[in-house]
Length: 460
Image 1: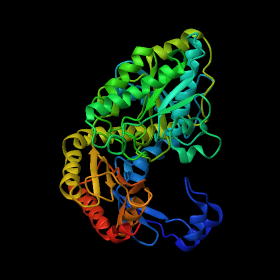
Image 2 (image 1 turned 90 degrees about the vertical axis):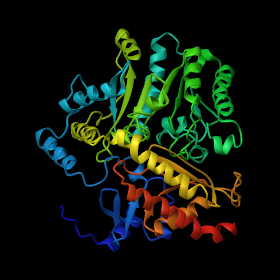
Image 3 (image 1 turned 135 degrees about the horizontal axis):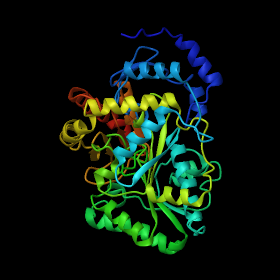
Image 4 (image 1 turned 60 degrees about the horizontal axis):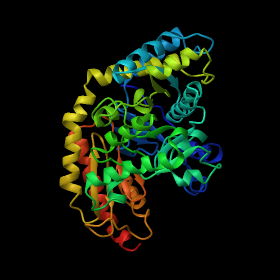
């Protein structure tokens, strides 16, 4: 058993408030609370904070710790690689063994024409690479006017300027002058929120048609690519109707537009397939990946690229002047390779599809869907959401909307469950190693939190 270090939590919280700027945070609230919650150690599906409170991690860190916490073999392979070769870059026609091996491994998992891989450090950087790569490709094809990306409202593709612009979150766009020119946003396939009561097939057709309408409005000759998450994760676990993706792919092929599947959350088993595009049955030209690639143990991301795009780059003879100091970092790649070994050895993808995913779906349907505050409880594999409504049988929200889920989330955390609030939904994405008993705990805790929040929600 690994020894847990003793931390001076009071001092750490003071230092956090004095010097540390956490990601996507209100710094006023950080100061008001006297610093962040300090997580000190974790094992399996449970995290523990500096005050000794243990919480079932219903978010797998940030949608990423697929193999669970405390995997000593991942630490061991990192140590061994650090001793052998801690770093070398992939600039200037050089490479190291781990990223070469990892690229080949990913090409096998992606299949088909997706046989080339570019490495980055985060999902945001993976989508920045998509942005640069797509525009470069069309310029080399003699169609430099094809610069426009079509994305969806409420999509999340990262936090860099390009990736946040590709995303469709208004609250991010109000800071930093985004979106940058050349990005168009259309409706999301959010059946509960934007097609309530509508036949799912009709809604799928309408949501896909919005993409074609925007292509025609912009001019097909100007559109470079459509980018989408198979399931919109940070947008609230938006699971599209079954035929949506086939319709989207057909539209992209009709107008010769590249199709990009953002698998940063959905990849590496989350939906019960290695990748979301495999679950939904469509074929992208480019795939962005991160999070589950290393289960969050070290920062690494990848961009899978089709043969045709790479052949165009090769035929041009030009350099692709893009990359990062840590692209293909040997230690991160070595850990990612071993992480894939664990996922395969323990059949976490198959287990999610056949066992834990259906078990979560049944638990949500039986124990949460009937609750008077629940408008919908949905899941796919091991990602899910619970919509909170003011009136059963409707999608009407409490108060002005967006206030209910944070209240319920705080009740969940107080009861030992870490989940996330997105507008009026509680979202979950637990480690793929979660047990039936832990799924029961997750669902029962949400139910208890809903019960506890009823009076407070009624007063909104």
